[in-house]
Length: 471
Image (tube, rainbow, N blue to C red; front, side, top):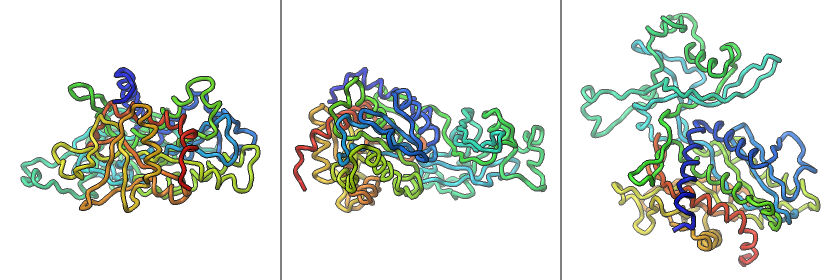
């Protein structure tokens, strides 16, 4: 069992719940992380500006890209160009429904909202939920410019009702629906909207891209006029709050645990590893966390893992330090190590046959190392040995996960980044039930265990790596 006390484990579970509740979209998640880092004395950098002369040993820094990805790092007091970077990588996005560029729809007396499917969600779980919208809105600033504003409407303003059992007697045998026509949320009734502000809600006159009542609600939330709204990226989210549950308060019920679970643990672990005035003094490495967007749709974007985001950050850190040479980056990569952290499948008591019999991660028993012979995960015997050593010395239990040979295996950002950069990588994650559902389940104690694992990884890896003899 972990060396953490029950009170410490419960506190970390509560902090994750709070993080999820404050993060209905990737933009909100990164904004919360940004505020945490600022509160922990990290200095914000800008990619558009030079970092030369800015980055110093014992310094703490971060930058964001697109407001939906973030890189945070702390430079060891004994760091020199060519030394390694201790990395934890995760992602900020989750499967969801996103508003279409022209979302205005109506039918049978209802105002509806057209949505796109983002990622591979368990879409049937989105029926009969109290939904709202959150994301980023581009607003005219009055000086001829534009600024991004975060918005999250807390009230349940949308719903996707199921069809009554009386109209489909086969629904309990095989619930089937058309993703384009049946997964369209209801926003309001036409009759009510006509009595309010949406004057052309039911008319044939030229219609704007979105319902006026929706635009006015967004504008009210931001305290701007509708005319000041230029565009937005909004996702639907479940307004039911994340909560600690189970008879013994051992479970967390929440949306977006894939992968806000890992995102929270990574940032918290980095900050905790810096506690103490001399925490970085003897460290020869850089400690770095990166949270990418768009993992759920393949990571190929300017702010996804299949971009140059991490490589650019690593190169700039090396180039900004005194003593850099032509091969400092390549030397650093060979001295670096990355934990790719993404939730893994916990064994389901009602479907235990879906797991390989010797690899069944359970909730409340710590993070699992993920291995796949076909390189869907980047774990090797070397990288797993390193992490297991750190975990064992600090009383953190670890589990193992491998998919059955007759099942397909998902993947993570681990193999992608490992192949791009040549980084030693291990894939791990906290076990999760109902992955990609609108409400997922994880173990409450697993949160604190993963935070502690990352904390010790950051503070201990550099010394341990000196004892690893492979190449």
